Image (cartoon, rainbow, N blue to C red):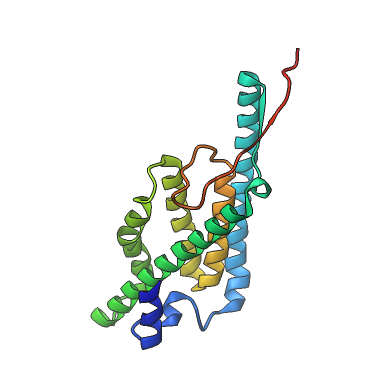
Length: 199
């Protein structure tokens, strides 16, 4: 975090390219909010389907009903997960801005440098993020978060909106990942309510 902060202070990286300043809030609250709502809605529907499937399977096998809820997570785990998600989004934003800055200087006439910067960031920063977990579901979740927030940034250039979507996706994805690793977004907490099998 120190290097991005010093880069902004010294003017090496533009806060605008990171999505921290000169934000078009009209676009953010219009197109950006619409995209964010669509992603959250899709994840909510997936959550409902997966939780119902998990409950039916676990109840049939062992009489244990799984009640996965963000409210069941310990506060420290919620805090750690949120901090990690924000740090991860900031890391992506810094890499994206650095690449964007380089492209502007190397090829001033490049068409839509932001687009190229987004996907070059995926090739450079995302592998490092994926190295922090060996769980396939976590890795797929990270890729999904990166793609969703990158598309959102392309249309809004708003780090804060991307950070909000990142947090929302982490919470919703981990509500349905009982076996996921704690090395990326904090340890997931499962609240198991045991009930008797119906005779």
